[in-house]
Length: 387
Image (tube, rainbow, N blue to C red):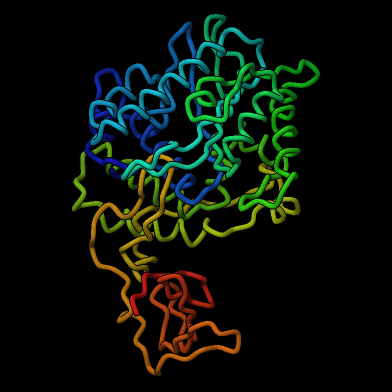
């Protein structure tokens, strides 16, 4: 299944009672989460809680699962995926029970490990969801600042982490971990509860070498509270593309109408976000208040990126395999305009001298071939390569 289902998204955004402005904002949040999770970056989102009901203007299955997630269950292509959806639903329901049971400024942590048995079309990542509880517009409401994060803790480590945070009788299984969210409270400062959780996670992270970065706590706090503003000002071109496409999705444009621009957005996001070590860079960067970047117009941005290929890399996400919205051209070995034969570098890597890179336009380059991809040494963009 696709990690972004245009038909399903447009049906959701067309529900009665949803204003045009709310629908566009919902589409923006949905696309943002899709882009950042696709590239394994922390993704912020927001919820509003009232009694037992939790509503999201953002990404559908982070809101009221009793309503929107059921649609995904109905659309599940296999029984295995349906069962997984139902388990995730139960896990979120357990987290939802805490939204009014814990004091204000508490933080709820929900861990979601990948399926124990591989599911075709639904590989999944290990996800962590943080829900920080803030006062709402009235006494019967609560505003929830939330953040999703991709990690690679094993099921044994996740169970041990939850046990350390106070959960009881946790087993290192998909079901046990999903059904036992935990909450932390700290009245010393508003975000103290989040830091209690994050410091514990950091201690687990330090136990062995990881494939993911455990980002500084202050930056994660800023993402939790002001995440979308930070990402939009850090990546204004991606934000402009997302805003343009959100409006077009809500307007009902088809896959054929937006597919080319959608794929350009995915490629640009991959170039900007993938393989970026923000854990060190952010420590020396200005705060949110110091950012002063004007967001370009969406259509202008697309025009300036016409050189990008239209077929993005296939990436496994928590919701399924994520590729382009449609095949409107692809990066192939022929695009590289090979001028010389294949060689091997001193290190033994296979290289190919090319006239130009189709992604950044660099000329006279020596590209590296490895793991089925050819990679530009200038922009580090890659494309499938078949020997």
